[in-house]
Figure (cartoon, rainbow, N blue to C red):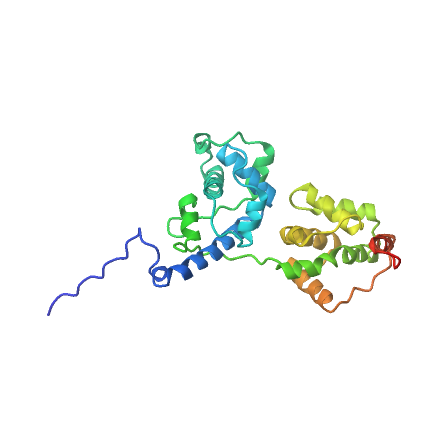
Length: 285
C-alpha cells in the first residue's frame, strides 16, 4: 500500500486561492470596492483634512494627498489610483504603526517633525495590518487590495448614503434647534456644550452651531463626513439613549414621512424661515 502523498502547501507569495478563480474584471471591481472599504475603516477616527496632514508628515512632502482625492477614493469614484496617493497612504499607515508600537524607530523613517497637533491625530488613527503577519500594510499591499488580490478581515463602519445625507441636510438643524429649546437650553449654553462634546476639528463644531442657528447649511458631503461627530455631540448634550445610527434611522424616518418633530417655534426657527422666504423670488420676477 503506497504512502499518502502529502498535500502541497499553498505558497505564501500567492494571493488567496479563491481570488484567482474569478475573472480579472470581477476581481478588479471587487478590489476597487474593498479599497474604498479599507479607506472608510481608516477614516473612522480621523477626518479628511487630518489624513491629508498625516500624508504631509509621513512623506515629509506637501501635497501628496488632497482632501478631494480622499473623498473620491472613499466614495469609490476612482478608476485609476495615483501613485502618489498610494505612496502617501502606505507611508501614513506604516509610520503611524511605528509611532505607536516602535517609537524608537520613528527618527529613521524620514518623516517630518512631529507636532502636538500631529500627536493628537496619530493617537486616534488605527493602522491597517496584514492579516497573516499583523504587520502594518504599505503601498504594495494597498495596491494588492485595489487589484483584488488581498482582502482584509475588517468590519466596515456604516456610512450615510448620498440620498440619506440629502434628506438629513434639510432636517438636522431645525431638529436640533427644537430639541435644545425643549430642554430649556439657551443657544449660547447649548453652543458651548456642543463644542465641548465635539470630537475632532473645532471648525466642524463651529459649523454645527451655525447650522443650528440658521446661518449655514450642510452639504450632503459634509454631513456624510461629519455624521458620527455630529450625532455623538448631540447625543451627549441632549442625553439621548440612542446610538449614532439609531438616531440617523429615526431622523431618516421623519424626513421620509415629510414630518417635523413637534417643537417650540424658537427665535432661531423663525429666523431660518425668514431667511428661506427671503431667498424665494417674488411673483413679479
